[in-house]
Image 1: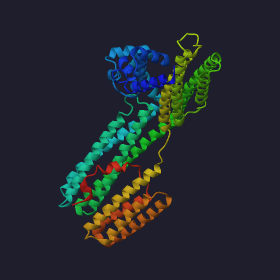
Image 2: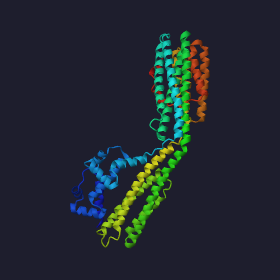
Image 3: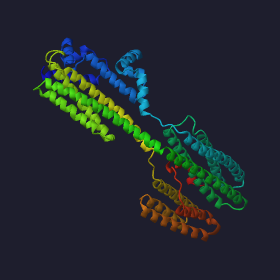
Image 4: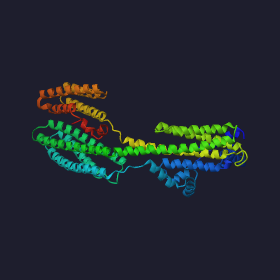
Amino acid sequence: MDGGYGDTIRNSLNHIESKLPEHLNIGGLAGGAFFSKARFQQLFREIMGEPVMEYVKRRRLLRACAALADTDESVLNVALRFGYESHEGFTRAFKAYFGVPPSRYRKNIKSVRERKIMLSNALTKNIGRHMGTITECLQAAKNELEIITASAERAAGLAGTPRNGTILVLISEWKNIAGKISAISEISGAFLKGGPTVYDLTDKVYGLLKNLDETSFQMNILSCFSNIETARMGGREKEIFSEVNERFAVLRDTVVNNRKDAEAVIESLAAMIKDEIKDEAGSRIKSISALLNAAAGEGDRLAFEAREVEDAWSGVGIIGRLKNEIIKRTEAVRKIGVPDAEALNKLETYAFHMNIATFNASVEAARSGPEGGEHDRGVYKLARGIREYAERLNRVYSECAALYDEYEKLTGLLRETPKTERETGDIVLQCEILGTLLGIEADRFMKNENFRGLAEKVLSAAETLTEGGTESLERARDEISSAAKECEREAKAIGRQGAAFEYISAELWRLRFGRVPITHAAILMADFPSSFVSFS
């Protein structure tokens, strides 16, 4: 058979691949290749080693197989998408080819991709103890905040216009915080429900930390606003709200301490499952190596068969080239060793090269005449073996990719996010907030230019912090210290009217010398009402 027929069939294969979801029949395929149906079927079988519609069915099943593994699409939809008219017909064909029904195949492949490490009893008890402490403290904190809010509402009646509007906003926000604390306590109370895995637990712990971060940060900001507002008050009104603020500060510290308990859970989790995670991650690599070694062993067997066919076909170079291709790709598979993403991409390439070898072997077999004829000499069997090897490499690639993804997830649990960057980000945000508040107070106080200048200085320090590095951090801290010192001096110079400025000065000193808790500030600012940037 001349090469032109091979090109014709190759074009037909490309057409079939692009039209698999559509209705395909021999008449249409033969017409597209400009052959009669009988002649087209004969050529296709001679070159590909199987009837054309069997090839179409096989390709549809392989594509459907991938869809079942990679999507959540229903079995019926997958069946209809790849040319089957019913769930039953697709299931029969799928089971006949793969040995299991499609639903079982999906369950099996997903179990490989979603292997779970269950928690040990010791770890469960340890975490349960911490979560119990957190839940009790949070429930007590919620009750205390409700009492504080009630006291503030009673005191709000003493606050005269125009400050009472701001106080009512603060009270509303305190109520919101109480609701959030209640919600967090429900999360911690149900922490171990459902028998969580390591993945689930890690997500839950970090989710709890995030909630505690956000709540403690909001409480910090509310405390700041409330103290500034209280600093403007006088008499019995100031006395009541000072007491409210003190109780709120104690409550804020309770929430911060609950975060420390949550951190203890993480430390406990890391200490107790680190080795287990390493073992599980190692098992994924071992599984990949086993799959690769098994595939290489299959390649060795096939290479041996190719040598025998080469001997029988002495003087025909194509068999030797096929043999060398098998040996080359098999050695490459064997040399992958400890796999990584790049190595797995190479494995996919090796499978592609074997697909090409499959086509070339099928063409050579067709040229030899009918299977079992005097010129066959094992080439048909070799062509089938190469095709099976190519399919095996494709399956091994898919399985190895799933295992490697699992390995990456496991090792990801062992990586820690540096706290320095997050702490710096929090300082930047708090700098910006204090600088803005200082500017607002300066505008209120007869548009005081000295305080306005200090506000710009604090905002400049925040910008310096964003540059990163130890030098920028120290320079920013010096700027904050200088601003805090000047603000305190200016506040004392104007007497009682400088009370709010004195409080901001104290917050700047605390920011300069204290450690800032890790927060998720970008999310928080969206939660604050606009009235907090424009007191009336």
